[in-house]
View (cartoon, rainbow, N blue to C red):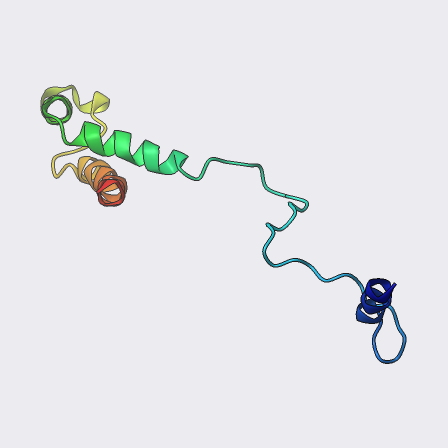
Length: 111
């Protein structure tokens, strides 16, 4: 009986109004409505780790070297109308800068 009165007094304020139940801080918050799709937060870490491991191999260096040799050779000796990147190789520089701009942060994230 005394316990009921005490719990009743705890749920009502001094003005006699009923308070809503308190949220428990020691319990996880109930999931709410999500507007974005669910994703695995470790997926990007695994992805960057795979790329960083590949960029650090001899296989990548060999492939990158072959692609650059073919690119330069094609744009030097191919017929004029088939070349896509003239002598200073501005497009090649742009592609290598693009590759470095995404590779460097991924390598750093994987460290």
